[in-house]
Amino acid sequence: MRKIKKAIIPAAGLGTRFLPATKAMPKEMLPILDKPTIQYIVEEAARAGIEDIIIVTGKHKRAIEDHFDNQKELEMILQEKGKTDLLEKVKYSTELANIFYVRQKEQKGLGHAIYSARQFIGDEPFAVLLGDDIVESEKPAIKQLMDAYEETGKSVIGVQEVDEANTHRYGIIDPLEKKDRKYEVNQFVEKPKQGTAPSNLAIMGRYVLTADIFDYLATQGEGAGGEIQLTDAIERLNRADQVYAYDFEGDRYDVGEKLGFVKTTIEYALKDEKIRDELAEFIQNLDLDTPRS
Ligand code: UTP
Image (cartoon, rainbow, N blue to C red; front, top):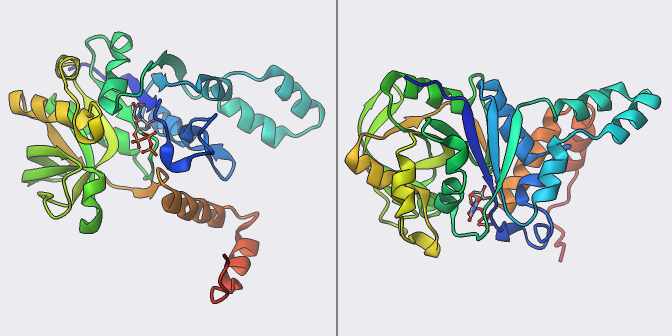
């Protein structure tokens, strides 16, 4: 079986939930504390042993490219000022993996973004990581899926439970048999209407896919929201061949929408010993009874 060495990180979406911040900058560059969300995702892939990453970009290509590129002038300034801590952090972001870029010319949906990277992938199995969720776990979430792929040779889709009230926001699986953390799947449904979801197991932005998916994406029509949905192509692949879902372990931080983003920022700030105590005091002293607007 072929080892997974490549990953796609799609970052070409319009990020409408964060407008106007995302007017001139991809949402994947919004920082949680001092790191853009996409760096957490690249770090997860690198920890899993991924060597080559292709980032699918849209109109705002430069900020991402510059972030993972060398900044010699900045490095020299930090060196001269003796700011070795910061220098290490700046250098670290350039050394995580080999990063390549492809442009998705029109924002036609996640399935279309993945299809844009097909030439880079060729006929190898590959990983996909979305920046909407940061996952903290001892074994990287994507590595858990890679290991499940190595057992089966089939595509493996990462899932976790969500509140039933939120199932309409996600791709949802109709699970069959579960063995360890791995499910056989009857059906994959993108954003089911409220009250119709077949389970509360939601696709969580981590995938290992065989290159067969490109045949389905090539002919995939528009689905939910008028977009070419990756979930719909996975469902067709599942009908032709087995696709597994894997309930991965890890604490998930939803950074794809405003409330989740703020909660994640607070959680990470509370983990930072330099600011934790003052922030905790600030939160404890908040007067929540006084209206703010
Ligand atoms: P989302 O639907 O969460 O991202 O797509 P979005 O469209 O940017 O955000 P909103 O809903 O307007 O706020 C999931 C992932 O797929 C990428 C996004 O960048 C995100 O990482 N994506 C989505 C693309 O790369 N291209 C697309 O056409 C759509």
